[in-house]
Image (cartoon, rainbow, N blue to C red; front, side, top):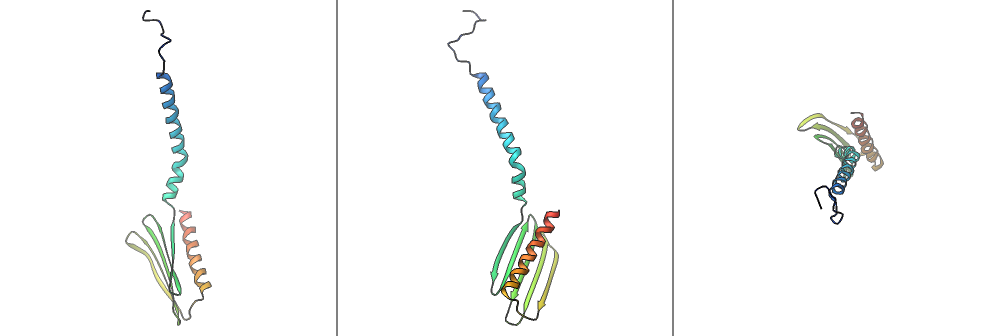
Length: 126
């Protein structure tokens, strides 16, 4: 048996190993390209947390360094609505309004829902 002869008794696996590695690399690459936009979008999704506060409610929404806050505080005499928006530690909006009557629970829910929807609409435009 000389140098030019092929020994059929020895398995020849090196080309198969290379093709399997290439196929696996290709699969992982395609999977990453398919999932990367969804993973990045999930990381950039608006987080919304609504909490009941006495007769009112509070909502905190965050997206990266941005934060939106609304408190609807209801007492037997009146209602105070506080809205704040900040980026990092800088306040972009800090306002409050007082209503001379207590808001009904359905009105509190409506105010919170409207605020959440308005922030979501502004975030989607950017």
